Structure formats: C-alpha cells, structure tokens
Amino acid sequence: MVTYFDLPRHNPWWASPGSIEEDPQIREYLNSCIQWYPDILKYIRTRDNGYMFYSLRGPRQVGKTTSVKLLIRDLIQDGVEPLSIMYFPCDQINDDIEFRELMELFIGRRPHSNFEKKYIFLDEAASVWNWQRAVKLLVDSGMLNDVTLVVNGSHSLDVENGATYLVGRTGGDPDCHKIFVPMKFAEFVRCVDKDLWTRLDGTGMGSGSSRRDALFGLLRSKTDTLEMLPMLKRELDVLLDRYMVSGGIPRAVNEYKTTNTIERATFDLYQNGFRSDLAVWGRNNDTARSLVAAMVKRASKEFTWAKLARDMDVSNHQTVKDYFEIMEKCFVVTSLHRTEMHDRPKKLTRKPRKPFFQDPFIFHALRSWVEPDTALSPMDGIYQYLRDSTNQGHMIEGIVANHLIRLCFNLNPGPQFNYDRNLFFYKDKREREVDFLLYSGGDMFPIEVKYQATINRGDAKVVRELGSAHGVRGLVITRDHMDVTDEYVMLPASMFCLMI
Image (cartoon, rainbow, N blue to C red; front, side):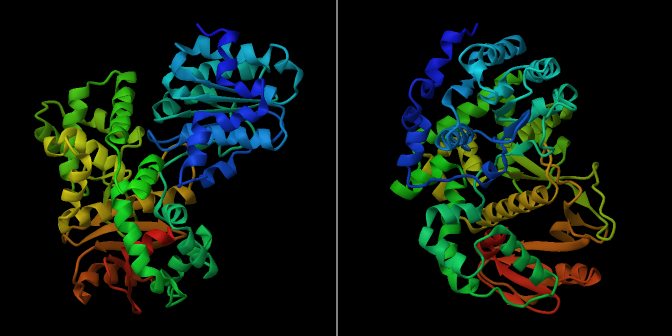
C-alpha cells in the first residue's frame, strides 16, 4: 500500500526545484548525443486551466518516461510551483483503489492542497487494472477540477477495456489520447545529423507540412521537382541504412551513433518489457514466442490465421488471432487488410492480411529472441540479415508501411492506430497487385516498393494504371532511381521516408 511518505523520493523537486536536473532520465537525456524532444509533447496542454487529461501510449523503450520528466522539467523552468507537481511509477500500485488513494493523498494534503492548479504524472498507469474507474470517481467528485492528469502505458488494451469509464471525463482536449511511437525517419535525420537537417531546413523542407505538401504536389501533378532534395540523396541513403539497424528507439539510436553498435542489454530491455506486458494480460510466453518466430518469417508477406497456426503448430487459430491482436495493441506489429476495389475501398476481413513490425529495432530485438543464430550476438544477426537484398526489401517495405500508417493517423487522430479505412494493400481478381493503396483528401494513391538495383517502366505498370484511373500519379519507391512522368513518380526510399 502506498503512503504519503512514499511520494517525496519520487518527487525530489518538492525539496529542491533544481533537483529535476539530477533525475536519472533527465541526466541520461542531457548526456546523450541524441536529444530527441518528441513533437507530440508540444500538443499536451499542461498549462490550460481546469481539468485536463492525457494518455500517452507507445511501445517499450520509446522514451515515454523521459518525456514525462521533460514535461515536468518544462513546468518547473516555466515557474510552476514544484509542490504542485507529482510523479509516481504505477508498477508499485496494486489496483484501482490504491490508484485513487494515491491521487487523493496528493490533492488533499497540505502543502499541495494550497495550490489551485495541480499536475499529476502517473507512469505505466496501464499496468493497473481498471485505473479508469478511479479517474471516473475522482472526476465525478470534483477532485480533479483543477488538475492536469497525464498517464502513460506500453499498450492500448486498457483504452478499449475502460472506455466507458472515461466517456465525458477526458477534460478540455478532445484529442487527449496520444500515440507515442519511435522516431520516424525525418526525426531520426534531425537528431543524428544536425548539419544535414540545417541544410534541409534551408531548402524549405524543415517542417513536416512542407515535406508532405511537396510529396502530394508530385503525386497530384502540381509540381515536377523536389527542389534540392535529390542533391542530398547520398547522405540520406547512409542514414536510412543506419535507420534499418537502430530504428527510432532513442537508446538504440544513441548507442549506434556513439559506438557503432547496440549493447546486448538494450535488446534484453525490450524483450523483457514485451514479456512483462504479456504477463500483465495473462498470456503464455512460449505461445507468444512461436508467433513472433512465425511473424519474422512472414513479415510483409500475406498470412491467414490458419497459416500462422500451422507455422506455430497450434490447433486453434482463434488463439493465434488473440495473441496477434495483443501484439498490435502493444505496438509490436501492425497489419494491412486487402482490398480488391480501388474505386470503392473496403477491407476484406476474410482475405489474407499483411503484417509489419512497428520499427526496425523492434524487429531485430524480437528476432534475436526467437532465432538461435542471433542469440549470442544480436548485432551480428542484424548485419547478417541485412546483407541479403531480399531482406533489405522486406525491411524497407515495413518502414514504408509504418510511415504511411503514421501519415494516416496524423490525418485522422484517435486513441488507436485506426488506419484501416485509409490504407490497404491491393490485389484484384485478375491478380494485379500493389503494395499500398493510400486514400487521402478524396484521392487514391497507389504505391509500390521496388527496393532493388535495376528498375524499368514495367515495374510501374499497375500503379500507372490505377493512378491514371484516379487522376493522380502512381508512386514507385526505389533504392536509387528517380523519375517523374505524367503517369508515375519513382522516388528513392530515403527521400520518400523523409517526406512523411
């Protein structure tokens, strides 16, 4: 049971405001050569009056705790009274009753009760069953009327399970559920190569909106150029090669930049966190490992629940579906539905789907968990995997899928990655295939990944036909080739990923 005397050691700024600079996460952040301040933090309105609620969801090791500490640091530096700010790690809380009592301890006790506005940050709240019930009771009682409450977690399972408790109780920001994912490629470039980013900024491509406008301008035939971006391709290619190793997980990115390797402990941290999430939801570790092994082999390839069950030697495909959906909600994998109609998109739930891992490092970390040949040296396993050009193609297709999903989510924000009305893979009854169909702004954009040494006009055939049918240019994402015609655009993967 948590008592008031447990709180000061997690909130040293109550005694000394400057102690926030000595916080372990803040110290590690300041000493890191990669200081990633996620853009999403700019949209958390901590200073608004009245009750404000936010949930931050994202995979393990993405930097959620560090980001919460950065928000606290910002408040203190902006002159907010430190005694009005509470942080607490919820892995020490047993149930929703203790969760509620913890907030009551802070809100109702002097000297904290003296301040009209209070700020509560609860780390890994998603590990507490029914925590939303505690929030409901406190909102209904009026105790949170002048509180900004920020909770975070490594999965979104509880968002669905507790949704009814939070109806009408999420404060003044309707966009209160934030998805916190690893760095996308543009953020990676900004953190890893500041000189290159300065030059990009000088071309007018420093903002996400300007880059997206340039991409859609190409696809909608409003422009035929990308200004100076092609001149930076060689440098972007080098960074994309590094992104295929470290992904956007901050610790992995920092280690790989400073030492040209990623420590075994970093792989272990992610694996242990994933197993911890499975345990919270009462799932079997061996079954999850079998599914991960099957997913590694089928990444970016079509699957059905029955096929995965055979791969896993599991008799009940409903078990496979259950575990896969948990992995989706833990931000480990995503999947795309097939559609056969490019003019009227509709996901075909009975047809095979395509799976993708959320981030290259997540893929590598879990691959080293399930494949014995990478168990002794995860980095050797990564290099061995990426030496194969086919594997490189699968990795790039996964990165493209993840960036398109982010684009869909930015266009239609919500508590989950609800992208299945905007993004599909296409395979019609004539067996014509396209890797992705993106629906945005009333337009349909066919996108094909051809990450290979040689490219010819035939590689653009289907995207050219589908694009022409909708009055847009089809897009082929290549390794090196760039071309702009009336019917299609060929764009190197490093340039495409930068533009999302």
